[in-house]
Picture (tube, rainbow, N blue to C red):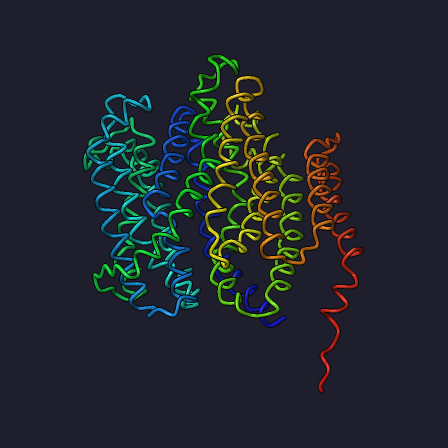
Length: 501
């Protein structure tokens, strides 16, 4: 129990930064859907999907590799930090320069003619992200959760502040003739440009602070460390590429695969904006998973040598499923008011029905993260590549086949199907090479029940708004009662006083 309490405490701190920070950041979708056109929101969706994909290439699995070599390889942690950070700094500068120079070609390929500057800024943003990755990982490894959380929240606040200034503040002041229309080179017609610039400014400003708090590094490229690290990280790189394909490719390709005039009144890029905005609502599940991941990854590695670790991993998984299924139902039951609150212009509500499907997809991603501990602590990371490659192939096939037929639903099914298959394959191989006593039957039952209840709550419509609200949310209480009835013996065990002997 002490280990679980420690994990829960660290998850709460990381969750504070992740949930508070991303909740603040999440509010930006209100700004984008209110002040930008659907086409601009579509551009934001596709460009940030590309950034998510390239971010994996820029960091190539080095965060997980850093944890593994700092905790379980009998190496000097300081030397590992110096080597890892030096390697990432060198590679990110080379990759960033290549992307910067190739920006005009990328702009043409993605149908942004004359806007190469968007992808030059993308190169700078990716470079900043890469050189921050290992210092942030070091803070997590050293259990400096409060410093980590503070830096993340500062970054989010800066990003939100710059967004509000550039998208709302400057146009308002220009309208009042308080500042000239071309103040500091401001261009009133820009939209997605200011989203990128705000993110770029925010990330650049926190680099010195994070480096200082993590401890300055000595430039050092130790071949004896790099060679085994590289061998460990290469499968993680391909896993990451396949994984981000699974997560982001639907948003990146949606506008290019959707047939013209599929949705009356919307062109393909505008429809991609509707899809991307509704996808953002599902991030409420993803941010919980991210907070859990921040705390759990170093925790899992540190517990790997304990003989009781398999039981601990199983208990963590079970608690994770219960919490996330409850969250899924709560969000789905309240989408009728959450949706219009954040998606400010008419038309976005057409995609709300895919949100419960996406929430379930993210929950399965969290299950996969829990399951993946077996290949990380047994150094069988090559399995991660094949599992995520299978997921990526399935994602592409489902998108290619179903988006032209079912539009938004086809893209959401790609996310759901991919993570379901990845979790299933990872579970089967994990039980073969590193058996963990998961409560599989009960966990699957909770997920199936929660998925059904989520859609029941979403589609339930009673004539009186207040009665409708009570009826939808009463389903949350019913689900809690079911869980309590099934978990009563385990709860009694946890609440039983410890013997003084």
